[in-house]
Length: 88
Figure 1 (cartoon, one colour):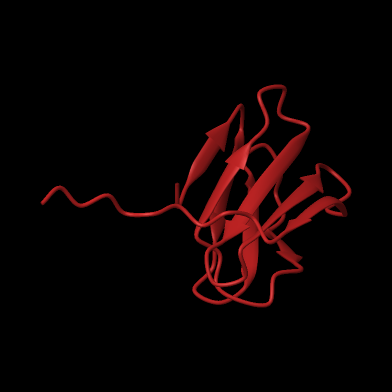
Figure 2 (cartoon, one colour; figure 1 turned 135 degrees about the horizontal axis):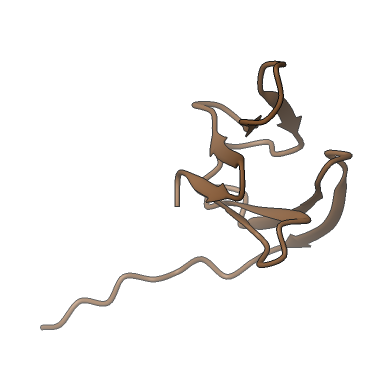
């Protein structure tokens, strides 16, 4: 998804290679998370809300980020790209 919401946080990829993390409880602006080389296709929070995951179709990579540090704590390269099924 292009937008993820958990508790009081909103997560959205930018038009380039970064992620905005908004904390609606805080008074500061969004945090920028950087690490992808190509555009980010989708983002999501983990069920417990301590991690976020991002996927880039062009890179075929998944990245796990720790909240609140913003550090990348996991990386999967060569992630399988979903395919489109056509019925003939």
